[in-house]
Length: 192
Image (cartoon, rainbow, N blue to C red; front, side):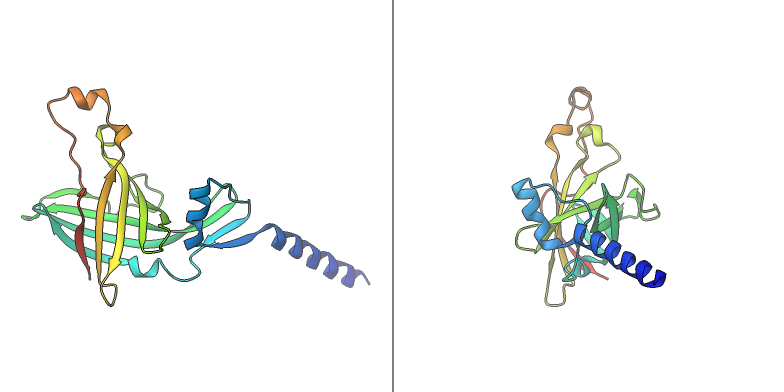
């Protein structure tokens, strides 16, 4: 009898926990953002339909005499009792002669310098990531937009929409204007 009682309690506990948690497909997360709706505790924003897979891998491209190597991986994070699948972006930017401008490829997942995924647009085609560069006080931040192209998803476009509110008085008064590492016009990268 004691075993049946323990078994029944275990089932009730499981059902209680299951009722509190829910899975929201990643492509529906945009609805919460657009409607400014609070996400319930215990929610898992999950890439059920594997929409992030097409972005994963190493991408290479050139823009404005710079060479870009972008490495995109996927992770699941937890915050405020909510889980979320997202992309992480590491990068190495060099001059065409090989001089390193910036390199985040060796950093751990918890590094502040990594570019972190946020959401898919309402069409599920463009993924938006949050970017905070090494010089965030002088305009090096914003959102990076990536879009996978080609029959086999072997091409990707990327551009930066800068965070305009990060430009401050110190940058404005200096003789050195802020330098963006990522282009504000679409560049094309090829999957390796």
